Image (cartoon, rainbow, N blue to C red; front, side, top):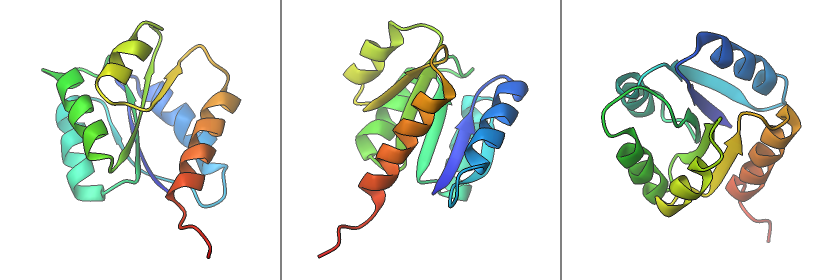
Length: 123
């Protein structure tokens, strides 16, 4: 799976990259610290999954995240320290949300669910 991580904090991006690279077949293909960088990275790298912090700096980031979620490609996972963002992102069409207070295992579980949904069904 091709993954793009968008978070304003470089340390968070690094930690998530290490966590995700430990998984077989998962590749972090890019990073973004702002909405502008995220837009460029999505167009250029064509990730299958975007893990994006709700607090990513940029005008109308909620609107942009909602547009991505509706397009369904890439799959969007929103993360935030604020749990009330879960319902807001769901209203925008985002299927996956994780609190930054959750364990890394919970995040990996979400990625595995997405991976299972991305793989073609065997007939």
